[in-house]
Image 1 (cartoon, helix red, strand yellow):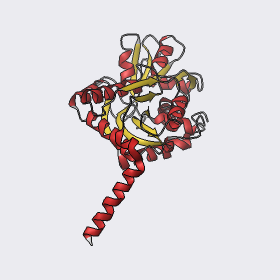
Image 2 (tube, one colour):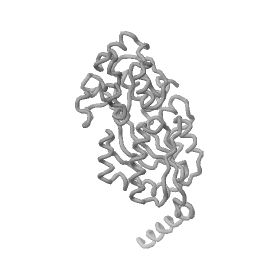
Image 3 (tube, helix red, strand yellow):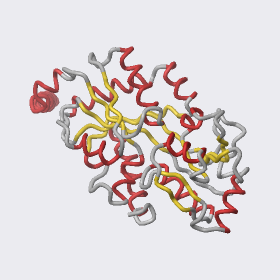
Image 4 (cartoon, one colour):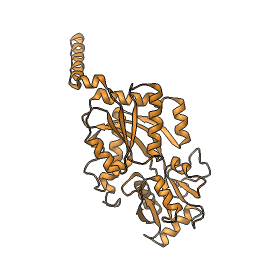
Amino acid sequence: MKTILRTAQLALAAAALAVAGPAAAQFPDKPIQVIVPAGPGSATDTVTRLVLNKIGEQKSLGQPTVVVNVNGGPIAATRVKEAAADGHEILVYHLGLLGTKAVGKLPFGAEAYEPIAQTGSTRFIVTVAENGPYKTFKDLVDAAKVKPNEITEANSIGGASHIATLVLAQKAGYRPRIVQVGDGPKRLQSVLGGHSAYTVVSPQEYKGFQGSGIKALAVIGPARAADMPDVPSTKELGSDVDVSVDTWWFAPKSTPKPVVQKLANAIEEAMQDSGLKDAFAKQGVAADFLKGDALAQRINAIDAAVQPLGKELGG
């Protein structure tokens, strides 16, 4: 009986590979385009390039990978959604994909793709200009409470940073005036130029602008960052917020499972490298890797929390 069952299982596995077709078996047979919905130097771009550089060193895919920076999350997401389901064009995104659906910028979200892997988690830094009026997080919160909807917050409406600041403002009891600016570097430039009172950015974006006149007031989360020990967490300052941005890799829906698995395995091999882990740590990114069912469950759980925020996020 066991022999019969084993024979049947092997037959099903062979059938699955046959359905996937020769294209899956030969994957990849040309360069892989990795679509990043942010500009060079942004947090997502930096993490993506670190992983891809390691994959290139390990030669685990046998083909070069090319980062394509696309200005605008909806444009990037739509491009990959409509791409050929063969794994040669994939998307790297985060919480912002869920937010764009919640606010109605896109009629679809993570469910429109095949999740490949998660590579790291990042927490936001509340940032102001050094020569500005806010020397502490309390200064900023108090001012925003006195002048609701007046203190300007540079953000990317509907994106991951907006989700984080929305939750923070709700917990701390203030309401800022959101100004649509764009990705992290653009938001920092807005603060430095005096166009916005404050913003939130990733640790790597913050470090890229250190020495330019910016100041970190707090880390959004339950604890201080190991590489920024002098910056308090919002929890210790009275706002118990736990929002992180996980970097997710997606393939178009219906991409054959063997292709998704090959991509996931290549990413996992890269993430196991100690040098890459050190590089992540220097960028303030926790090297948290997920794939398969564990990844799908995490995305679904976060999505369930984000979708009800649509109205507050600007939908």
